[in-house]
Amino acid sequence: MEDLLLKLQDSSPATVAETLALLLPEDMQRLKDALNLLETPASPTKTESSSCVSYHVMMVVDGSDFELTLNREASTFDACVAIAARKNLRASQVKLLAAGQSQPVRMSKMMQFHSEMGECTEVLAIITVGYDFGQPKGPLATSCSDITFEHFPVSAYLSDGTHSSDTLESCDGQEVSWPLSCETSKPALSVLFSDHPVCGKILMRFLVHQRTYALGLGVALVDMDLETDPEYSEHFFGLYHGGYSDNVCMQARRTFTGQDGTKHTWTGGARLAILFDFEERSMQCYEGVQRFGHKHSWLPTEDLYPVVSFCRPGDRACISVSFC
Image (tube, rainbow, N blue to C red):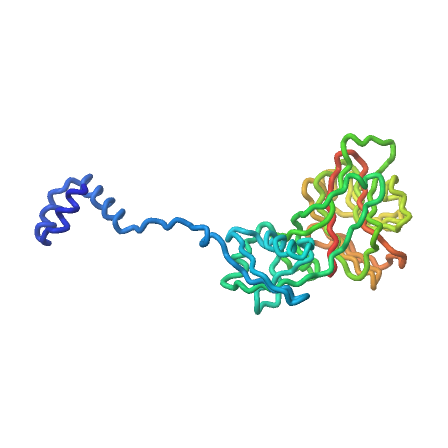
């Protein structure tokens, strides 16, 4: 086929037409394939420089700036982690904006930073106040660890239910578990993050990996009994699953019971949330991004702290606290 191509290259139009007319169908197809190979340029090899993008980052808080090089495949979460590390911060404390934009890029492991920035390589980094969980207290204190998990963004709970339920962002928090090796006769075990009370307007987000029976997620007074079922505690306020129904509990009573709750709900990756406004002393619970029950407006004036309660070994959940 190579010899034929060379021959045709130096032939007159009449000779080319005569030669092509004598070709068998299979030879004609081989000729077309060979010509296509000649016309198709070889795919360029992606070099190290073309697979990375350099950004100029300015820290709004102190005016410092630096160059940051990221792989084009890096997520917005990766970008936040890399920039936060320069200031010894947690990723959730950094909000990134493309120069000229007013809305920060959402921090998510599922979103490419390069795509979100478009052609812009100028990045503004704003440091925000993050909640410090401090040292956990209670029988599950040694089973807590730092975690980053995916949940619906804060904006989903401030937009009157108009937010799409398929968008997630990364948030920092604590993972709490009841180890299978930890046997006890107590009806429940809890962990209380009592170093710093929650205040202002905050959103608590929960990711429930495993719920075997009852579960409590919310806030509590500092003197809550951490070895009792939160449903019977006058010091607990929040979401409560009784094993066969999902509820809102406050001061040892169920103030709302869901219509679709079963023993199979609020487990296996369920995302729940509570929006607190401590100036109004109010609390609105959510299942996914939908309101769960009515708004409660009688929280106590005393300091309240994040709490997670389990009733069976093997249970595991994550909690994050964000200021709104």
